[in-house]
Length: 417
Image 1 (cartoon, helix red, strand yellow):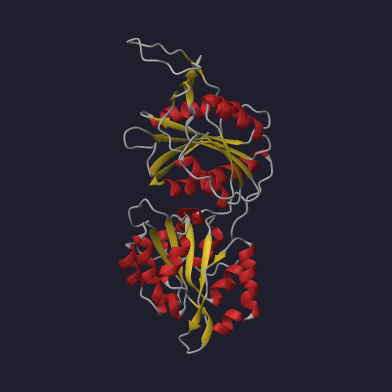
Image 2: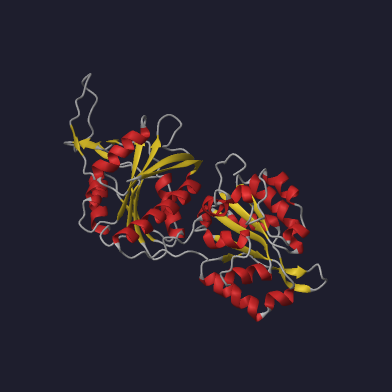
């Protein structure tokens, strides 16, 4: 790829050959303003309306427009692009483009990418109003929607040909507003049909009725993962420690406070789950004998006896018919080494590790992860937690499918196109 990756979503913008392509450079500009990394892919017809130089100027990336580009395809560039994107938008999407995708054809780079990606696909139609209303086009639309493709528009209004009716491409600001109306729109349907249990937030271990031991976890990463998994098609159960976050819409949440309560809730509900993600920052130790009354300040020193809390992650990994199990490791040094040790010691399927400390990890809006599994490792670069959650859920879905394939078990994930 040409430019340095930012912290926003990575969006592949496809531009097909319609007169509305003149709006697409403005769409790129507005997406970039919202923090997105935008890679433009043009069809041959699109080049008749807008120059690739224009898109390069507003995106800071070289436009891709040729499946047979020797330089890019020497490293299987179209597959790299398909894996790179968090989201694929085609604007304008012509009747020809919609028909090509509906029939699973791959005559050019853009259509090939749509077949190769596991990321969500959004089509923004633009065509004559009679073309849009034609039964064949509507059949193709319904077929793609059944596969998980999302349509934005078209708008009703006047066309370049002088006719009036449905078929106008939405304005760039409308497209951007729809894409960013909730961060979870950028996740795929790769977990459709699965049940996922996620823990989030800190735990509080009481010292007395007014004091407790806890940590700096805000729960933001776990809640972002719950929303990303839901948007990926999963049925999600969120077991949450005490946080100042609203319950995600449409997600069942069980509120707990202590490590023991979290352990009990997970053990009660994890059986039958396909995936377990232990994102909560569970207290490793708890006071042995919490005082039933407020401890008064009298002595210069106070000794507090601590005992080990139950290990929820390890207990799930030890189940005879366990779900695909993902843990989190928050470390202040030697992140990869400590995470690899935790991966092996707890015998989990994946471990997502991050560096924590002053202005890092806990209670921050951004994060970065090193994700490890037996025989593999991947770095998810710093991004907002909502975007990072989408990338991690995509990777979990990929490894989940691979594990089911290796063991001969069912894989229920479904691709959008």
